[in-house]
Image 1 (spheres, rainbow, N blue to C red):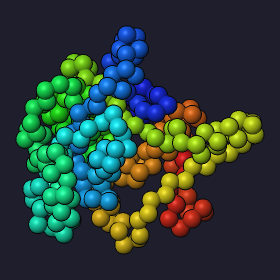
Image 2 (image 1 turned 135 degrees about the vertical axis):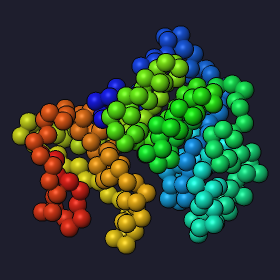
Image 3 (image 1 turned 90 degrees about the vertical axis):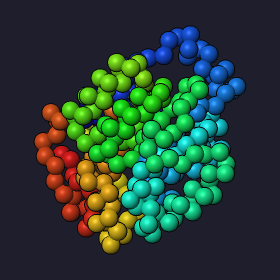
Image 4 (image 1 turned 120 degrees about the vertical axis):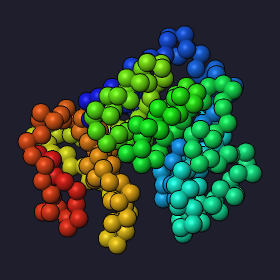
Length: 263
């Protein structure tokens, strides 16, 4: 799946579209004078969903070049509205709506853009292929797609083709590629030479009781959803491909609930 994406230090580009030299030169000027209109598709539960965290960053001014105009949340504005998490979402929507953010049940309900607009898709992985098509057909001119992008390679290929036909760039961010601890690990491995061993450990703050709900929500599995960041690091910096992995084994010798050991 990672082989479909063109590696960059901060993100992978799913579409082959590239900015021109002129647009790159002017990008810093534009960023200083304007903000990008962004819609968040799939917010999830406040303080748990990645979409919610992205929305919060924009609302709090942590990303000054982005302006959140709408949140699309089909579940908590639909069948899940009466659930306890739905009530939590409704309270956040009531607090956030007056700040100029529209809350919509579907992409079709979002007011049409009057200029460039980016869609940040952070819904369920299984929904991503459909959501990508919907936001592009709704007029979005760029897409930021949460990993792993789609359940299968075939779906990623179809998404890439559709985006390329519409000339819409689609980015998938892997922020661990530029984190200081990864940079330091790479430097130390280089100093130690080819005989060195580097271990990447993925941690999530889930209790054992919370795991059933976690895996139900992320049915694509641990490797494609959670450990995808570590797989991106292995592919980007260590040359790991499907052809160079000899086996995938539970690393029970490291910790009772440790992730898989790729050899």
